[in-house]
Image 1 (cartoon, helix red, strand yellow):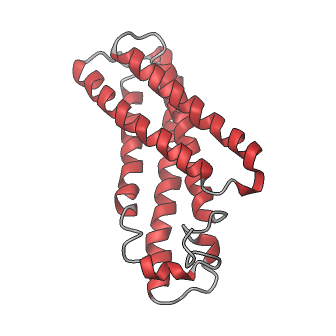
Image 2: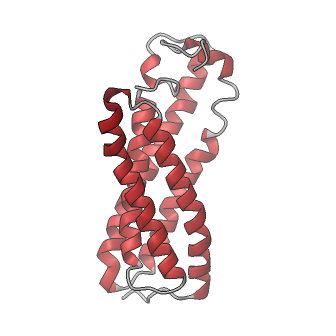
Length: 195
């Protein structure tokens, strides 16, 4: 870690104009995932509707937590750093490996991983694109959901950014792959007719 990024992380002021730019699209991308989950739920037949409803619930939790987390960084942290209002910000800083930002991001992406699990179960009997969606979602959710307790057991109180980097890598790779596959699936009209 850069020497200026040590507790209480006030050195982050030097990067406050540029280090928060990625959060603007991040605020929008999490709700877009919820919209995809809602479309999946709307196109799911009665036999799998409970699974897609649970997935939709986890997607809503994920979108809410991640968007709130990023919004706080943009609305509270960035202006505070730029104005030199740094008293008490260490706990909220994205640079604090034990801070609220990382904890909320971890929680949001865990909820997304749980949504993947239930979405994968929606595609339990499919072939072709549906089979690809099923296995991509189930493998990703298993990796992400197993990574948290696994890394926590290994690193204990020094978990820091390890899980965050792992879950973001798994989840965003999954979102890219399943985004393409779901586009094809929705376009093909292969989904079940809801009752």
